Amino acid sequence: MLSSQAKMQISERAQNACEYCGLHQDDSPLAALHVEHIIPRIHGGTDDLDNLALAGIDCNLHKGTNLTGIDPQTNEVTQLFHPRHHEWNEHFGLQGVYLVGKTATGRTTIRVLNMNSEDQIALRSS
Ligand SMILES: [Zn+2]
Image 1: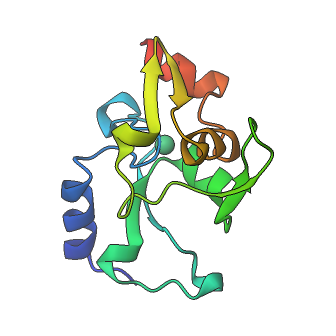
Image 2: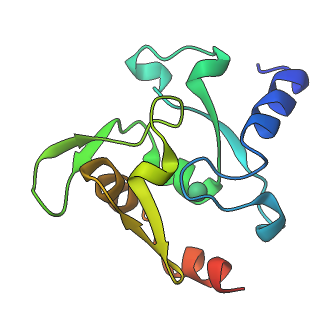
């Protein structure tokens, strides 16, 4: 179990927003952001702070135990976004209410995590 102090540290580091889609806790009052394992335990991921990220329930559920996906542009197997190793702005951008992938990792993560779902777009429009 994660201590409440660790949870607070993770929330602060993420500025209380999902580290994948950027949804802020204030914009999602009905669903608390979760602490998730970047590398899932099934793949040997640890409970170290470096392997934990703050994520919305949608991103977290879609990510599941995936580490990779298929880039919709090149059909290549591609690593998902890693909040500790990758810079968000290098991989993602916003066009209006739509998230766009600037790189293979960005495009693949948007696809696997379903980051342009109707729900997410509705939250971004509000
Ligand atoms: Zn998210």
